[in-house]
Length: 152
Image (cartoon, rainbow, N blue to C red; front, side):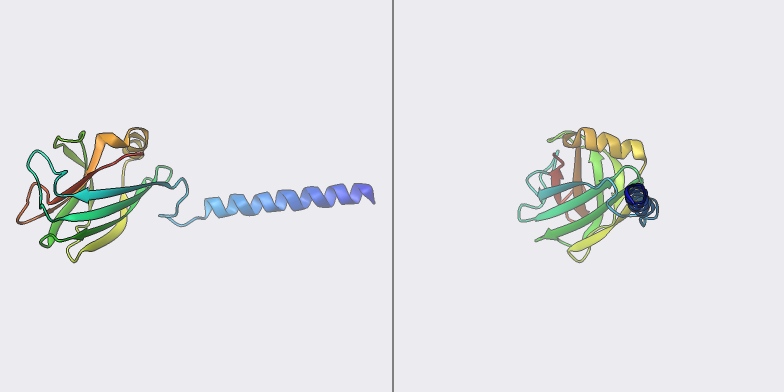
């Protein structure tokens, strides 16, 4: 009976492990498999080299999934003209930089989506988020209406 109990416990443990492994393998794209989250406040004052909309503000929320090569995001902006573009750029605070990830502009104040991104770019953002910023552009401020520097 003792041997049977040990075998049963082993089977149940391995069965549970199988369910966990199966759940990991079959998780849908865009799930938080490694889910490194960053929330960034955005303002017009942070925009560089020229200031953005002085009344503008917003929030960007990201979930970086390097295993899937995706960045899930939600952008919310307030007190700016309709947005025409949004990006993650590489550059320190106070500097403008190149686009590394394109995002859907929050034309009506909010946008969300899942961007397919090179896994190495996601790893670099995770390693040194302050080297990157998010900004939202519009016709009045084509260089950026609001901006927020990423951080840990």
